[in-house]
Amino acid sequence: MSCSRRNFLTGAGAVIFTTGVATTAALSSRKTLANVEQDGNKLYGMVHDETACIGCTACTEACREVNNVPEGVSRLEIVRSEPMGEHPDVEYRFTRNSCQHCDNAPCVMVCPTGAAYKDEKTGIVDVHKEKCVGCGYCLLACPYQVRFFHPENGSADKCNFCRDTNLAQGKLPACVESCPTKALVFGDLNDPASEISKLLNNEIVYRDKLHLGTKPKLYKIPHQKGEVSS
Image 1 (cartoon, helix red, strand yellow):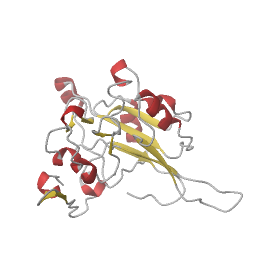
Image 2 (tube, rainbow, N blue to C red):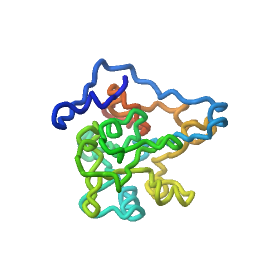
Image 3 (tube, rainbow, N blue to C red):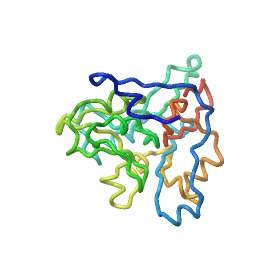
Image 4 (spheres, helix red, strand yellow):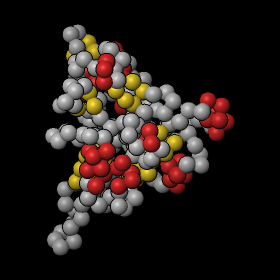
């Protein structure tokens, strides 16, 4: 399914998200190794292992510190499920809510100034803060509701895989480095030898709202208890 500006903007800025017919869930198509060697492009993605996540929120705190995210807003959130089981054997399921870095990103499609964009060299969806006029189209268009207005500079903001901080220094994203249970795996989906590619080839994963055609690059290993929703 293809997202377009027409799907989202009608009249005086109304945003409409058209889902159309749901497609079957499948992993995003990947370039062959020969293609990667030819163009050198990366396609960054992340896996959140819900079976390993303990909900400690070390990732959210590390993200806030490394990226100077002000109080009151957050680039990522760990969502806790309703309790499963009966006392004293009660368990919780934890899932990650953050930018999905969609290949077919609605936020990019609706941005009137080009502030929201996808970096074709890395696949990272990011924001040119100096181009953002605060119209809010991208916030409304995002089906994952993970964008916010930065309270200090007034531009749209969200997770960018620590592109300007840790990645620029050759490190992994702050959330990945800080996770005590190694529940997060980050890497190049275009590289068959990368840890994330090997993980996706050997684990059952799902992606949120895949039927919308956004082609998200945040994969999740489902918790062993409870229903997997998408």
